[in-house]
Image (cartoon, rainbow, N blue to C red; front, side, top):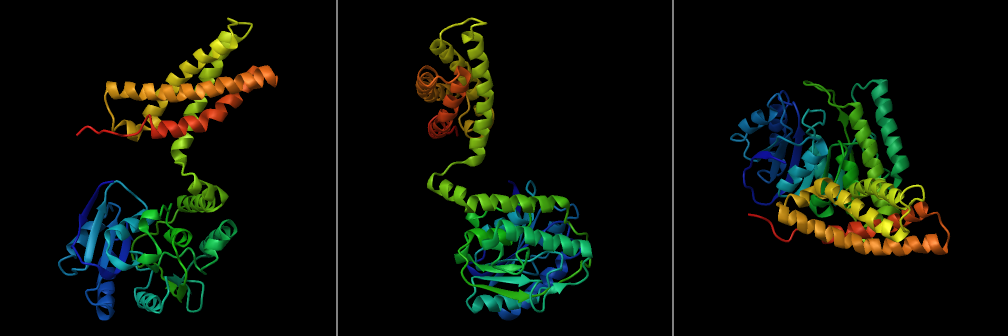
Length: 394
């Protein structure tokens, strides 16, 4: 990730308000001016406004940077290789120093004056203060029936998948809220798409919640960025949170396992299964060479081990392998990988013979079961040994 921050080095302040932007050049000046005026009246010089721009083609970030001399509480982060509202918010929070963290859209659809009511709710003891369209004094200005249906449908879907999370607020789709820094650690958040509030509710230590009604305004300038992809990201986010917060998530907390890397390892393992089974068939089957089962299995497994190492080094553990470059280190990783897998092979052979010779399972099925049984062993030990970074070239 490459960013170009224009940062005024502020001491710890009360409020860190992040404004994620993309093509908001026609709105950003009015928004910064209005927010600065409002906040200077209630917490003068005790806040920071952080614009996080995703390399807007209309140069929103340049316009925001030009405002810094006039508004010393303003900071600008120009992200050149990363996209997404939620990740922009998190990056702003990580840079900020505020005791209270907040987010507001950069398109003036969130009325800035509501911010004062949210601050008041926080001062009265709320861990989280949410601007809601679905309580008294809330609403939408001029939405079509289709947009209303999609918004409510998405909320209903969320309530079905994550009732204990989305059910805590009337408007979980809101992108306008404040939260105590002590109640949420930005480092723990891993959102997908636009709905950062859902991530905060799910992963934060949120006890007391306050809601403030507001009317969602129509755009005065620029175009809406909502697309079908955002709805798909929302669904993906809900499912991912459900898995992480459910029984599977609790199991992962007890036995930490890098799931994405493990899935890659498993996919590589499938290619190894194909290699292993093919070689075993060619060596052992009565219609081919008809070699002994154990000898055939050892040769087949070694060919599969070399195949798996090549793919794992280039894909599964690529980031770690790049930190240990050179033929010598690659051969060292291959040796470690071989040792780990050969231990797994010993377990595999024992189980294979148990299933085939004692239990009478067909040798191909027995081999498949044996491979599955040692896959987790191979992954975990290889992660901790074969691709462990112990020395890095300067």
